Amino acid sequence: MTPFSNQHQAQQSFSKEAIRERVWSDLRKVARPDSRFHWNFAEFITDYQGSEEGARRIQDLPAWQESDLIFITPDNNLEALRRLAMEDGKRFVMSTYGIARGFLYVDPTTIPTDCYGWASTLDGMDRFARPVGLAEVASLGKFHLLVTGASAISTYGIRFGKGHGYFDLEWAMFSEMHCLTDNPIVVCAGHDCQVIDVELVGSEFDTRVDLIVTPTRTIEVPKQYGHQPGRVVWERLEAGMLERIPPLQELRLAQESHN
Image (cartoon, rainbow, N blue to C red; front, side, top):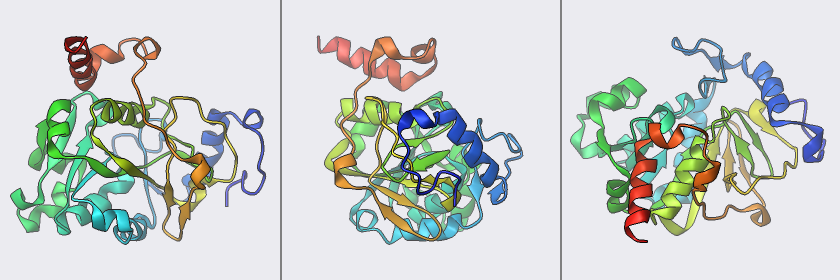
Protein backbone atom coordinates (compact mmCIF):
# COMPACT_ATOMS: atom_id res chain seq x y z
CA MET A 1 0.00 0.00 0.00
CA THR A 2 1.38 3.41 -0.90
CA PRO A 3 1.52 6.43 1.45
CA PHE A 4 -1.26 8.00 -0.63
CA SER A 5 -3.83 5.20 -0.39
CA ASN A 6 -7.35 6.05 0.80
CA GLN A 7 -6.64 9.77 1.15
CA HIS A 8 -8.67 11.16 -1.81
CA GLN A 9 -6.67 14.37 -1.78
CA ALA A 10 -7.05 17.19 -4.28
CA GLN A 11 -4.47 17.47 -7.03
CA GLN A 12 -2.69 20.42 -5.48
CA SER A 13 -1.90 18.39 -2.36
CA PHE A 14 0.65 16.29 -4.21
CA SER A 15 2.77 17.16 -7.20
CA LYS A 16 3.46 14.43 -9.71
CA GLU A 17 7.12 14.64 -8.80
CA ALA A 18 6.41 14.14 -5.10
CA ILE A 19 4.23 11.12 -5.88
CA ARG A 20 6.91 9.65 -8.12
CA GLU A 21 9.53 9.97 -5.40
CA ARG A 22 7.34 8.32 -2.76
CA VAL A 23 6.29 5.49 -5.09
CA TRP A 24 9.87 4.95 -6.28
CA SER A 25 10.96 4.55 -2.67
CA ASP A 26 8.52 1.64 -2.24
CA LEU A 27 9.32 0.29 -5.68
CA ARG A 28 12.98 -0.27 -4.80
CA LYS A 29 11.86 -3.11 -2.51
CA VAL A 30 10.34 -5.13 -5.39
CA ALA A 31 11.98 -3.74 -8.54
CA ARG A 32 14.36 -5.59 -10.82
CA PRO A 33 17.24 -3.24 -11.64
CA ASP A 34 18.29 -2.56 -15.22
CA SER A 35 22.02 -2.82 -15.96
CA ARG A 36 21.78 0.26 -18.19
CA PHE A 37 20.03 2.48 -15.63
CA HIS A 38 20.53 0.65 -12.29
CA TRP A 39 17.88 2.12 -9.92
CA ASN A 40 17.30 5.39 -11.76
CA PHE A 41 13.54 5.12 -12.24
CA ALA A 42 13.54 8.52 -13.95
CA GLU A 43 15.19 6.84 -16.95
CA PHE A 44 13.15 3.66 -17.37
CA ILE A 45 9.97 1.86 -16.30
CA THR A 46 11.27 -0.98 -14.18
CA ASP A 47 10.31 -4.61 -14.07
CA TYR A 48 9.27 -5.97 -10.67
CA GLN A 49 8.42 -9.10 -8.75
CA GLY A 50 5.14 -10.53 -10.03
CA SER A 51 5.10 -8.96 -13.50
CA GLU A 52 4.53 -12.43 -14.98
CA GLU A 53 1.31 -12.78 -12.96
CA GLY A 54 0.22 -9.35 -14.14
CA ALA A 55 0.87 -10.37 -17.74
CA ARG A 56 -1.33 -13.42 -17.34
CA ARG A 57 -4.09 -11.23 -15.94
CA ILE A 58 -3.91 -9.09 -19.08
CA GLN A 59 -3.93 -12.24 -21.19
CA ASP A 60 -7.25 -13.18 -19.55
CA LEU A 61 -8.92 -9.88 -20.48
CA PRO A 62 -11.69 -9.98 -23.13
CA ALA A 63 -9.88 -7.18 -24.98
CA TRP A 64 -6.83 -9.43 -25.32
CA GLN A 65 -8.90 -12.28 -26.67
CA GLU A 66 -10.62 -9.97 -29.16
CA SER A 67 -7.44 -8.32 -30.43
CA ASP A 68 -5.34 -9.40 -33.37
CA LEU A 69 -3.18 -6.27 -33.26
CA ILE A 70 -1.98 -4.76 -29.96
CA PHE A 71 0.20 -1.81 -29.01
CA ILE A 72 2.67 -2.53 -26.21
CA THR A 73 5.15 0.02 -24.86
CA PRO A 74 8.86 -0.85 -24.47
CA ASP A 75 8.69 -0.92 -20.68
CA ASN A 76 10.71 -3.53 -18.81
CA ASN A 77 7.67 -4.80 -16.88
CA LEU A 78 5.96 -5.76 -20.16
CA GLU A 79 8.59 -8.23 -21.38
CA ALA A 80 6.53 -11.19 -20.16
CA LEU A 81 3.47 -9.76 -21.93
CA ARG A 82 5.34 -9.41 -25.20
CA ARG A 83 6.27 -13.08 -24.96
CA LEU A 84 2.65 -14.07 -24.27
CA ALA A 85 1.59 -12.06 -27.32
CA MET A 86 3.94 -14.11 -29.48
CA GLU A 87 2.82 -17.39 -27.95
CA ASP A 88 -0.83 -16.44 -28.57
CA GLY A 89 -0.13 -15.42 -32.17
CA LYS A 90 -0.91 -11.75 -31.52
CA ARG A 91 0.68 -9.19 -33.81
CA PHE A 92 1.89 -6.14 -31.93
CA VAL A 93 3.60 -2.79 -32.38
CA MET A 94 6.11 -1.41 -29.90
CA SER A 95 7.66 2.04 -29.85
CA THR A 96 11.42 2.38 -29.58
CA TYR A 97 13.00 4.14 -26.59
CA GLY A 98 11.90 7.78 -26.69
CA ILE A 99 10.21 7.02 -30.05
CA ALA A 100 13.57 8.14 -31.46
CA ARG A 101 13.66 5.28 -33.98
CA GLY A 102 9.92 5.14 -34.56
CA PHE A 103 8.06 1.85 -34.12
CA LEU A 104 8.78 -1.87 -34.34
CA TYR A 105 6.30 -4.43 -35.67
CA VAL A 106 6.19 -8.07 -34.60
CA ASP A 107 4.43 -10.81 -36.51
CA PRO A 108 4.94 -13.99 -34.43
CA THR A 109 4.62 -16.19 -37.51
CA THR A 110 7.97 -14.83 -38.72
CA ILE A 111 9.85 -15.71 -35.51
CA PRO A 112 11.02 -19.22 -34.54
CA THR A 113 9.07 -20.32 -31.46
CA ASP A 114 12.26 -21.18 -29.59
CA CYS A 115 13.33 -17.53 -29.97
CA TYR A 116 10.23 -15.98 -28.38
CA GLY A 117 12.02 -15.43 -25.06
CA TRP A 118 14.85 -13.52 -26.68
CA ALA A 119 12.55 -11.72 -29.08
CA SER A 120 10.44 -10.34 -26.21
CA THR A 121 13.44 -8.46 -24.76
CA LEU A 122 14.33 -4.98 -26.01
CA ASP A 123 17.56 -6.26 -27.57
CA GLY A 124 15.66 -9.15 -29.15
CA MET A 125 13.05 -6.79 -30.55
CA ASP A 126 15.81 -5.04 -32.48
CA ARG A 127 16.81 -8.42 -33.90
CA PHE A 128 13.42 -9.89 -34.79
CA ALA A 129 10.99 -6.97 -35.21
CA ARG A 130 10.56 -4.91 -38.36
CA PRO A 131 10.91 -1.10 -38.23
CA VAL A 132 7.75 0.65 -39.40
CA GLY A 133 6.72 4.25 -39.85
CA LEU A 134 3.53 5.85 -38.66
CA ALA A 135 1.74 5.41 -42.00
CA GLU A 136 2.59 1.72 -42.05
CA VAL A 137 1.33 1.35 -38.49
CA ALA A 138 -1.98 2.76 -39.71
CA SER A 139 -2.04 0.23 -42.55
CA LEU A 140 -1.62 -2.76 -40.20
CA GLY A 141 -5.10 -2.39 -38.70
CA LYS A 142 -6.59 -0.61 -35.70
CA PHE A 143 -5.57 -0.97 -32.07
CA HIS A 144 -8.36 -2.15 -29.79
CA LEU A 145 -5.94 -2.78 -26.91
CA LEU A 146 -3.01 -0.62 -25.85
CA VAL A 147 -0.83 -1.60 -22.88
CA THR A 148 1.61 0.67 -21.08
CA GLY A 149 3.62 0.77 -17.88
CA ALA A 150 3.93 3.75 -15.57
CA SER A 151 5.82 5.30 -12.69
CA ALA A 152 2.58 5.70 -10.74
CA ILE A 153 -1.09 5.09 -11.50
CA SER A 154 -4.13 6.76 -9.96
CA THR A 155 -7.22 4.60 -9.44
CA TYR A 156 -9.07 7.47 -11.15
CA GLY A 157 -7.31 6.70 -14.43
CA ILE A 158 -4.38 9.12 -14.54
CA ARG A 159 -1.00 7.48 -15.12
CA PHE A 160 2.32 9.13 -15.43
CA GLY A 161 5.63 7.77 -16.54
CA LYS A 162 9.13 9.19 -16.44
CA GLY A 163 7.93 12.71 -17.16
CA HIS A 164 8.41 12.95 -20.93
CA GLY A 165 4.82 12.15 -21.95
CA TYR A 166 5.77 9.62 -24.62
CA PHE A 167 2.69 7.41 -24.25
CA ASP A 168 0.42 10.47 -24.37
CA LEU A 169 2.22 11.51 -27.56
CA GLU A 170 1.83 8.01 -29.04
CA TRP A 171 -1.87 8.07 -28.20
CA ALA A 172 -2.19 11.46 -29.89
CA MET A 173 -0.40 10.30 -33.04
CA PHE A 174 -2.50 7.12 -33.24
CA SER A 175 -5.65 9.20 -32.81
CA GLU A 176 -4.62 11.63 -35.55
CA MET A 177 -3.75 8.78 -37.94
CA HIS A 178 -6.97 6.82 -37.20
CA CYS A 179 -5.06 3.84 -35.78
CA LEU A 180 -7.59 3.26 -32.98
CA THR A 181 -10.92 1.44 -32.90
CA ASP A 182 -14.04 3.35 -31.86
CA ASN A 183 -13.72 2.07 -28.30
CA PRO A 184 -10.07 1.26 -27.58
CA ILE A 185 -9.05 -0.18 -24.22
CA VAL A 186 -6.01 1.32 -22.48
CA VAL A 187 -4.45 -0.93 -19.84
CA CYS A 188 -1.76 0.23 -17.44
CA ALA A 189 0.37 -2.50 -15.89
CA GLY A 190 2.18 -1.85 -12.62
CA HIS A 191 3.06 -3.21 -9.22
CA ASP A 192 0.56 -2.78 -6.40
CA CYS A 193 2.87 -0.25 -4.74
CA GLN A 194 2.58 1.98 -7.82
CA VAL A 195 -1.21 2.30 -7.52
CA ILE A 196 -2.36 5.39 -5.64
CA ASP A 197 -5.85 6.34 -4.52
CA VAL A 198 -5.52 10.05 -5.24
CA GLU A 199 -7.91 11.91 -7.54
CA LEU A 200 -5.50 13.79 -9.75
CA VAL A 201 -7.00 16.25 -12.20
CA GLY A 202 -5.57 15.34 -15.57
CA SER A 203 -4.50 17.86 -18.16
CA GLU A 204 -5.88 17.86 -21.70
CA PHE A 205 -2.79 15.88 -22.73
CA ASP A 206 -3.06 13.07 -20.17
CA THR A 207 -4.25 9.74 -21.56
CA ARG A 208 -6.57 8.15 -19.03
CA VAL A 209 -6.58 4.39 -18.71
CA ASP A 210 -9.52 2.00 -18.57
CA LEU A 211 -7.94 -0.77 -16.52
CA ILE A 212 -5.08 -1.05 -14.06
CA VAL A 213 -3.52 -4.50 -13.80
CA THR A 214 -1.14 -5.52 -11.02
CA PRO A 215 0.20 -8.93 -10.01
CA THR A 216 -2.72 -9.33 -7.57
CA ARG A 217 -5.71 -7.43 -8.96
CA THR A 218 -7.45 -5.87 -11.93
CA ILE A 219 -8.92 -2.44 -11.24
CA GLU A 220 -11.59 -0.98 -13.50
CA VAL A 221 -11.48 2.80 -13.73
CA PRO A 222 -14.93 4.43 -13.41
CA LYS A 223 -16.37 5.19 -16.83
CA GLN A 224 -16.75 8.89 -16.11
CA TYR A 225 -12.96 9.05 -16.05
CA GLY A 226 -12.58 7.46 -19.50
CA HIS A 227 -10.03 8.60 -22.05
CA GLN A 228 -10.57 10.96 -24.95
CA PRO A 229 -9.12 10.98 -28.50
CA GLY A 230 -5.76 12.69 -28.51
CA ARG A 231 -4.26 15.33 -30.74
CA VAL A 232 -0.78 16.70 -31.21
CA VAL A 233 -0.56 20.34 -30.17
CA TRP A 234 2.54 21.32 -32.09
CA GLU A 235 3.24 24.54 -30.24
CA ARG A 236 3.23 22.69 -26.92
CA LEU A 237 5.87 20.09 -27.84
CA GLU A 238 9.15 20.11 -25.95
CA ALA A 239 11.96 21.88 -27.75
CA GLY A 240 13.65 19.54 -30.22
CA MET A 241 10.98 16.83 -29.96
CA LEU A 242 9.82 17.22 -33.57
CA GLU A 243 13.39 17.02 -34.83
CA ARG A 244 14.27 13.84 -32.92
CA ILE A 245 11.03 11.81 -33.38
CA PRO A 246 10.53 10.60 -36.97
CA PRO A 247 6.82 9.65 -36.56
CA LEU A 248 6.07 13.24 -35.53
CA GLN A 249 7.79 14.47 -38.69
CA GLU A 250 5.74 11.97 -40.70
CA LEU A 251 2.49 13.16 -39.11
CA ARG A 252 3.39 16.80 -39.72
CA LEU A 253 4.02 16.12 -43.39
CA ALA A 254 0.78 14.14 -43.71
CA GLN A 255 -1.22 16.97 -42.17
CA GLU A 256 0.44 19.62 -44.29
CA SER A 257 -0.25 17.63 -47.46
CA HIS A 258 -3.98 17.62 -46.62
CA ASN A 259 -4.13 21.37 -45.99
